[in-house]
Amino acid sequence: MSSILLPEPNPEIIARRDAIIADLISIVGAEAVVSDEDGRRAFETDGLTAYRKMPLAVVLPQSTEEVSAVLRYCHRNGIKVVARGAGTSLCGGALPAEDSIVVGVSKMNKVLEIDYENRVAVVQTGITNLAISNAVSKECFFYAPDPSSQLACTLAGNLAMNSGGAHCLKYGVTTNNVLGLKMVLIDGEIVEIGGPYLDSPGYDLLGLIIGSEGQFGIVTEATVRILRAAEQARPMLMGFESTEAAGACVSAIIGSGIIPVAIEYMDKPAIEVCEAFAKAGYPLDVEALLIVEVEGSNEEIEDLLARIVKIAEPFKPRTVKVSSSPAESAKIWKGRKSAFGAIGRISEYYCMDGTIPLKQLPHVLTRISEICGSHGLKVANIFHAGDGNLHPLILYNANDPVEVEKAEKAGAEILKLCVEVGGCLTGEHGVGIEKRDLMRHQFSETDLLVQMRIKSVFDPEWLLNPAKVFPLAERIMLDKAA
Ligand SMILES: Cc1cc2nc3c(=O)[nH]c(=O)nc-3n(C[C@H](O)[C@H](O)[C@H](O)COP(=O)(O)OP(=O)(O)OC[C@H]3O[C@@H](n4cnc5c(N)ncnc54)[C@H](O)[C@@H]3O)c2cc1C
Image 1 (spheres, rainbow, N blue to C red):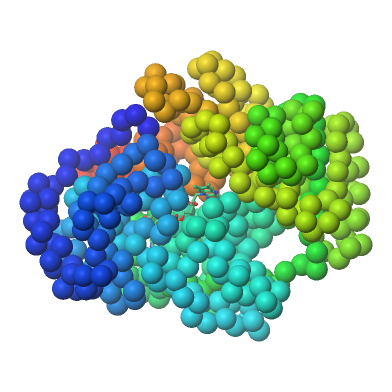
Image 2: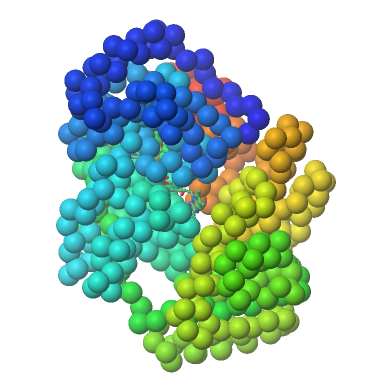
C-alpha cells in the first residue's frame, strides 16, 4: 500500500496526450471521451484506494465495434489500455498507468436475450451483477454468483476476477456460470468463445479467459447460465465460544456431504460491528458466528437444518437460531453483505483474500490472530467459510506510515501462510497489483514463465492492463527467454 513499483511512464506517449485525445474523439465522439482532470480523477483508483494513477484519458464506448476501433488505434500507436467495469476491485486490478487509457464498459449494460427454456441469458458485460438477477427474477430465475459488491460491480469485472460470493458454495463461482464470451483482442479483432451450450470442442479458452484480469482482451458480451430459484431458502445462525470450534464445525458440515447454499463466518469484532450496523439479530456473547443457509422445500429445509444442528453438537454451539421469516433472513444477509462497509465506518482496513483447505481453518484462524497481534494490529474475520475463502480485514490507520507498513507486512504473512498450508493467494479478488510480487510464493519460475507466454500470445506487446499479475522482474526474465 505504501509503495508500489510501476514502470516509468513512456514520455513519448505522455507528450502526445493531446493528439491521442483528439484521435479518440474522432473514433468514438467527444461525449465518450473523458479528458479533463476532474473527470479522470474518478478513474484513478479502484476499491484498493491506496494506489492512485491518473490515466491519459478515459473512453466509454457503447458497442463492441467501438471497443474494437479504440483497441486497434491503441495497438497501432503502442498505447497501453486498462479495461474497467465499476472499479470495485480490491487488489488494484483496475489501477490505470499514467501512460494508459482506461476503457470503461459501464455504458454497455444491456440484456440482449433471455432464453428461459435453455436457461441462458446474453448480456453486455457492463451490466451490474445484480441487474442480471433482477432481469430474470419475475420468472423466478437468478444468476448465481453473488459478490457482496453485486449492486455496483459489473459482469465484466466478475469475469476478469472470476468473482465469487456467499452463495457460490453450492453454485460455483463465475467460471462455473458462464458459457460464452465475445472479446475484443488488442489488435481490434473480435472473437467469440463458447456459446449457449455446455462445452466447446478444442481448448478451454473460456476457462483461460475467465480470471485473466483484463490481460487478454476486453470482454464485451457474455452468455451466462440463469438458474431456477429454489422454492425457499432459510439461514440459521450458530454462535461458538471459540474460533477453533466454529472452524472445526465448518469442516464437519462439509465433510458430512451436506452442501449448504452458503456457510459464512464472522469473528467477534466483525459480529459486533455488523450487528451495530444492520441490527440483524447476531448473538453478541460468542467468539465466532456461522451463517448457514440451506434451500429447498419446507420439508427439505427442516431436514437439512436438523442434520446440521446434530453435526454441530460436538462443537457445543452457544446459540442456534433459525430465521423465522423472510424479513429476518433479509436482515441476516444484510448484516453479512454490508460487512465491509460496516467495518469501514470504524477503521480503515486492508482486506486480504486467500484460500485454504478447509481442514486447516482452525489452525489458520489462530495464526491470523497471532500474525496481526505480533504487529500490534487488530483483525476482523469475515469470510466464505464453506469454500475456505478467507477475508481477514486488518484494521490500521492509513495516515500513519508505520501502521501502513505493518498492515502490509501482516497481509503478506497471512497470504504466505495460505500458500504454506496448501491453499492459494486469492480466492475471488484476483492478483492485480497488490499480490503481484507474492506470485513467486505460489508459483515456480517455470510456472510463471508458462503463464506469461500465454499472456504474450494474446497481447504480444503487453499493452493490456500493464504491470499487473506478474512480478515485474519476471517480465524481464520472459524477455530474456524469448
Ligand atoms: C465492498 C466490496 C465487497 C466485495 N465483495 C466481493 C465478493 O463478495 N466477492 C468477490 O469476488 N469480489 C468482491 N469484491 C471485489 C470486486 O467487487 C470484484 O472483484 C468485482 O468483480 C469487480 O468488478 P468491477 O466491475 O468493479 O471491476 P473493476 O474493478 O472495474 O475491474 C476489475 C478487473 O476487471 C478488469 N476488467 C474490467 N472490465 C473488463 C472487460 N470488459 N474485459 C476484460 N477485463 C475487464 C479490469 O481491468 C480489472 O483487472 C468486493 C469489493 C467491494 C468494494
